[in-house]
Structures are given as C-alpha cells and as structure tokens.
Amino acid sequence: MNKLMTNILDLPGVIVEDYKQIVATLILVVKSKQKTSKCPLCNQSSHHLHQNYKYLVRDLPIGNKEVMLRVNRRRFKCKNCQKPFNESLEFVEKKKNLYPLNKSGNSKKEGSQSRHSMVEYDS
Image 1 (tube, one colour):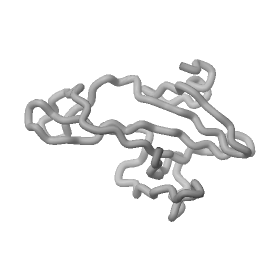
Image 2: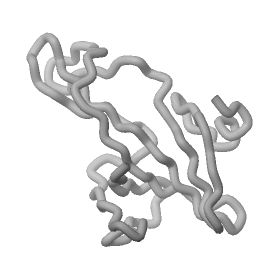
Image 3: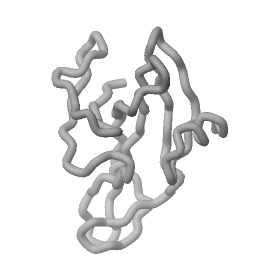
C-alpha cells in the first residue's frame, strides 16, 4: 500500500497499491478495502468471487498530469440466491458507459467531465 498516494487520492474505502507515470499520465493501481459485497437482489453479504474485470477510471488531473485509476472490479456470486453481481464502486457514478480501450490505449469514445468516468481495460 502506498499511504501517501492513498491520502492524496482521498477516496473513502479505496487503497492505492502502486502507481506509475507514463509520459503525462499518472496511473494509480487501486483496490477496495472491502473483502465482501452485498447482493443487490437479496442484500446478502458475499465473499465468493465469481470473476474479475479490470478497468481504467479517468480521474481529475493532478497539475498537468492526466490521472487514471486501474481498478479490479470484482464480480461475486451470491450463495443465497445464486446470482452473480458486480461490486459497487462508490467513487464511480452509477450507470456510466464503459468504453473499451483499443490496442493503442485510447478509448473508443470519451467519457463525461465528471470526477470519475470508467473505461474498460484489457490486461
């Protein structure tokens, strides 16, 4: 964990594990402090991981550096109702469109100007 970068980012429940700078872009590798997530259908807490998806989330710039958060969004499976569900990422606006990155690393469509917009990331 990078305590300094976690404090600078200042997102509740989010830890910065690592970071790297590529030219004028700062990429922060972040993860949730939560080990479980609640099923949106039955409200049962689950820790059973079903899948992982990697995304880049565009954040506000720091100085003249573009800031991207590399997020591992976990997909859980509820033991109660047996339905898979994505963990809620409180710092990303709900119902945001996901934009896959092409091979050059650019999104096919730009996100909105809100603090965090999500783009899908293929590792």
